[in-house]
Image 1 (cartoon, rainbow, N blue to C red):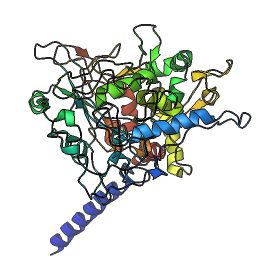
Image 2 (cartoon, helix red, strand yellow):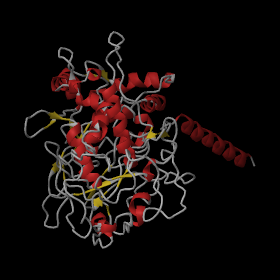
Image 3 (tube, rainbow, N blue to C red):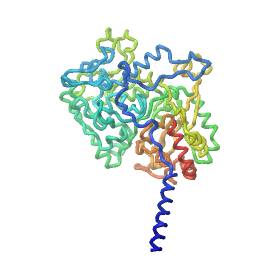
Image 4 (cartoon, helix red, strand yellow):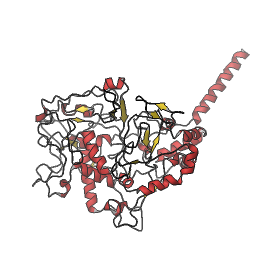
Length: 535
């Protein structure tokens, strides 16, 4: 009996020990503010509510704010981002500017169907949705926590559970006959897919659109569309797919306004510290003028103009001034759709929202999108961070995270008239981006085997961490929603490895930093997690 009591005491003691370990173990505190149903309640007098536009942080220059013209363009761009893209000019349900309202009657929705005015994705705009596309508006991929954010969940109508819009909403809208690929899970990340290699073994690396307009009943010219989805499941089984998830658009005008010399100066200033931890990093540069490119997972896009035009073309299949050719020229699906479609308009009146003499409608949607991104304010951190989060910021720098995730840079233009983008609101102001905007080797575990410019198969741009506290999914492919796991996965490979085509990948440049992170106490690790979720 005494032996049984002794064993019971030991077992109880061991259980208490395990519980004490679990009690102090670090844990991602989760999305700051929780998961919001970003599909509803987003309108104010017909305009989706986005992240706010920029204001001046300098009390000595209160005039440095978004002016009336910039604000008007910003708000019009928000409308364009929130509305659906229709497949042709003649089949658009009343677009914004033509009695902004809800569509009623066939062939768009059955007679008597009640349309919820809180959901902007019930209103379309004639903007030439491509035969092949990943999405049919900007909002779907940038809705967390509000329009302009990162990828999140959307409810198609009030009362419905918010979910990945690429699981059901986009593939089946207006009767489209698409099967969502297995990697688009109902409550998983929104994923864009690239093929690593072509059938002949040469490199591909391009985006392959997930869905087609086949079956779309809203377009009378689309009834005999023969476009078919690609065989993603076979490519997935072969390991030939590389995924990327959408990031937030907050503060991108500030990032665009950082001068190259500012980026390089921060890099040079930390050279000795980085060398001790095995951190290198280098810019991805424009192949034409040699200046530093900074947008996209591999910093492959030079400017917001290129980024916007490419997003319209690649993600929504919309041909435009920057990308004028249709991605799919199947005449059975696009018989009434000119290319390029989304371009500067010269229409003499506003019957279809394209009047040249209407300053809000003259610019094409992709340019409105660019303007909105340029003037969208930066993500705002928690105004009342916990003591743990405050301590975590110090530890974040102490272990070396800040050597790549540079806490702050400054925009240029202090000695110029008007400054970056010819707008005073972007002049000489701090940018708390937590990124060096350079690309780094991340090792074989994270390598996507896609080369873009000077960014190799295992290299990625340092992701800006501002706003990370309200993101749901992490890393370039959204493989985890746990911030702690995202940190640990930065460590990858201790030697050189070969990719599928014998390309060499190097060990992750973050290995030394993650080693120091792992040596912290559970409480200190928790403090860093709390700090990151406060951003």
